[in-house]
Amino acid sequence: MSDKVDGNDTTRNEPTPAEEKDRREHHVPRHLASSEKGPGEVGLEVGEPAEELSGEERLAAAESTVAGPAYEVGGEHGPEVQVNNWVVALLVTVIGGFMAILDSSIVNVAIPKIMSVFGMSTSQVQWIVTIYMLTLGVVVPTSAWIGDRIGYKRLYVLSLAVFTIGSALSGLSWSGSALIGFRVLQALGGGMIMPVMTSMVYRMVPRNRIGSAMGILGVAIIVAPALGPTVGGYLVQYVDWRLIFYINVPIGIFGILAAQRVLPNFQRHPVGRFDTVGFLASAGGLFTLLYALSQGQTLGWTSETIVLMLVGAGALLIFFVWWEMLVEHPLLDVRVFRYGIFTWSNLLVIATTVALFSGVFYIPLFLQNIAGMGALETGLILMPSALMSGVMMPISGRLFDRLGPRPLAFVGLVIVAFATFLMHNLNVYTPTSTIVWWLVVRGLGMGFMMMPVQAAGLNAIPTRMVGQASAFSNIIQRVAGSFGIAYLTSYLDSRMASHTNDLTAAIAPNHPAVIQLLAAIGHQFGAWFPGLQPTVLGNLFLSGMVSQQSFVSGIDDVFLLTTLILIVAFIPVMFLHKTHGEGGGMMPMGGE
Image (tube, rainbow, N blue to C red):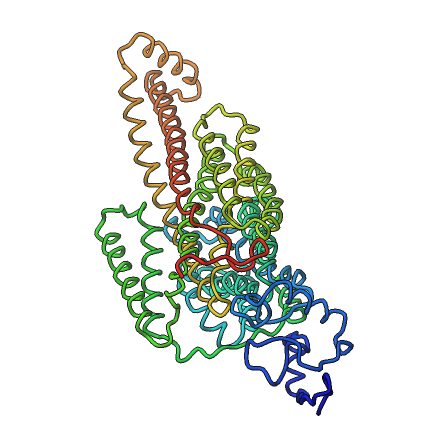
């Protein structure tokens, strides 16, 4: 048809019914769906009457004009689809992420009960946790390829369905072996959810609002691990351990139905043939590395098995990087690391992940082994810290959109380092209220720091490569968490041995005061153990005190070491700066 514009004939092709259907499915306003423009080209057509646009579409057009060409729909750093209410869509995706993260921590508190029910040994029952972690390492690298191939909405729904089915079957388990097998199925779905969820966020949220979106997403990431011990402890202690798996079923079904209803249909992209060699190299390397990190403390870091596994994992991962740079269609494109901010942010993620686990892992050890608290009480003590982080995440997200990542990461890192340093004063007489205060301050800093650090790296990546970058970030976080726990636990053991030697050497067995103390202890508890000499009882009691003090002093040393790691982390913070969409403007990206 022809339209008159300033006296000239201007031909404008009307969209075909198929094009109009595609436009509506992908939530693209009419002014962005010109059949005369190529992919990624947007703008009002000449002669397009303004009254054809609905109120929502005129608002979208205004936002696109203000946002700028870098992150409008179809732009290199813009969303793939126009979503009228991306907050609702985001909340739907958070359901799956929250469940997957919660499951990683909720199962730990049920391990003693599962051992008793199925008559499993310690070496057998640990596979319930270990196999889940190892399966995650295998499936995460495939998330980008599958998401581009079948569409991220379809992959998210499929992953959530597999996770839900795996949860139901885990609750129905009739033996330890069956439970381990069903945990593999559960991890096949759960491993995909987090990277797919992050990829969808960047495909439907404008970059100038990505901080707010990631702030909402961060609530699930930071709160779920703290809720796990509390919810799991209550269910195991007062209800039934199988409910830690059954609880996922109704939530999962709701999440699937909501995703089908709310999430947009994301574009599929040509991906080429599946990179089988790259998959085998990454799967073998990550499986071997994560297993070695989980078993190093048990088998010994210098044992032949662990050394060979670490060397083999390193060789496979080096080969994987080399292969991915050569193959035409890589499973994971390692070229995402040419974006400097993405590289620096992931180095910072390693430090923050180690810092996070130092509190999440060792404070519960102290509370349960020294203070004598149960899993439920321990979870309640950790709860205020998680709630503080959850409150700060959306706030830091809004500030990220205005200020960029550097000031937020700097302030958060200062707070976390300060709180971690205070925690090295922990002793057997530290009041619970003081521990809660330290953790709350630490949670405040984590809420300021974690979201800007992760969002800064992904913000530098073009939308078409976000799936690759998200998979890499997820892998780095998991390896950093496993490495952090393994290294800090090894350091704790060495420091405990050193403190034990120092305390033992400081006790002179022939000193009159020591002899008097041992005798007093022996007479005090002699009635309880009539078959033992008072001096033997005294020595046992004193040995327990030395062991307890050595353990606490070792934890203090772990917090000092973590503080030093956080201080070193100020270096990558200096390389974070505004990129596309942050602070309302565009700045050059590092590494380009």
